[in-house]
Amino acid sequence: MPPFSNLHWNGLTLSAGLLFTLAFAPFDYPYLAPIALSLLFAAWQNTSAKQAALRGYCFGLGCFGLGISWVYISIHDFGGANSLAASLMTLLCAGFWGSFSAIAGYLCVKLQSPKAVNSSYLVMPVIWVGVEYLRGELVLNGFPWFQAAYSQLDTPLAGYIPILGAHGTSLIVALTASGCLALLSKLQYKAIIAGLLISVWALGGYLTTIEWTHENGAPIQVSLLQGNITQDQKWRPENKLKTLQWYQAMTEAHWDSALIVWPETAVPAYLADVQDNFIKPLNQAAIQHHSTVVVSLPIKNADTKERFNAVMTLGDTTGIYKKRHLLPFGEYLPLQPLSGFILDSLDIMLGQFTAGAKDQALLIGAGYPFSTSICYEDAFGALGLVNIEAAAFLINVTNDGWFGDSIEPAQHLQMARMRALETGRYLLRATNTGITAIINPKGLLLSQLPQFEATVLTGTIRPMTGLTPYARLAK
Image 1 (cartoon, rainbow, N blue to C red):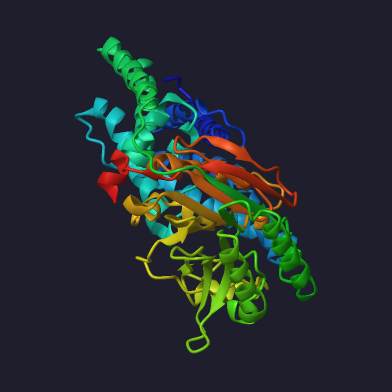
Image 2 (tube, rainbow, N blue to C red; image 1 turned 90 degrees about the vertical axis):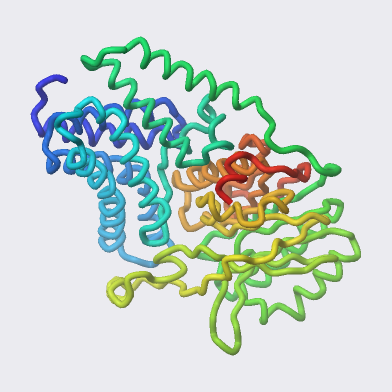
């Protein structure tokens, strides 16, 4: 490689981190992902573990500094923090998650045998994905943003997603990056490496044509409601009646749909407060019109004082799903009492919810069982596999209103598309301010609503059955 100084390498990896973020939504330059990783892997060769960690950290800062800039909006605009506190918290967040790239760099050098230098082309991708898994699934309840596979939903590598899932497909992206780097090195057998890369991508293209699941019933007309209630207005007492009237009116206007879905916490009140005068009459109307209404609202246990972020179905079959995977620092405070002290000092008010049971019965909608996720639960592939063999489709209710007009809603929608492709099911995604969408079993957007409009998306889906290889092996 060129005799760059450490300063040059640090600048290069910082730029590579920025390029890596551009591979994802809403920028959508997917081929930048293997290019950025190639630059990072090059920076980890012929250097010390300390320098590799620093270069990895620069990559992470570039990636998360741009990629999660929306944290500022959430904390400042809607969390009530002042500009300085919000800026510090955003930098802290980007710095923390960026440190995992530093860990990967350190391990890649530290675990590399001096006698097997060429093996680094295999070691680096494996360690990268291993640390990606650690960050995405385990630490602080997991933060799976910017896993490489999400950038590949519209490339030939998407064919591997129903077989290998997000982490397995990320490994192929990382191996592609490492293989491209090997082609620029002094390694022998470059023709074999090039042939393998071409074969892997060609096979992925072929795999995209395979139907892993199949239809299992007549078409279902669905309507997804997008109320566009901004986060700073949502919980104001004076807006409660107006909000409920809008959702009721839009529901009544779409009784011809077998399934009507409201977004996350569309009802700005606890269930007990609206049970008699709103939920019960709505349930009776749903029964009369042979329709299922999927309503989202918080529930408080009067005895234990526990609070749940929940979804309930109204109509012939009623049920309740309570969110299982809570958002750290948003719905609960990890690292207590430290986190609580810091946030109290910054005057940031956050909710404290209780997680629902891990194995909850599937809700029933339009006569079919479906898998439910609330907000960023759809960022975790394993959650969507619980009882997936019985689920005919997926429903995700979300409130991305916390992030305003930022890049986060597009990123979140991209991850939702992954869940549809992994499971081979239609996914209905109802959001408060956008992006509301209907996604087919191939992970493709059939239709979507524009952001920041109060409107309804009506379309048709089909119930599905069967299991993708990923769902069969990982569930």
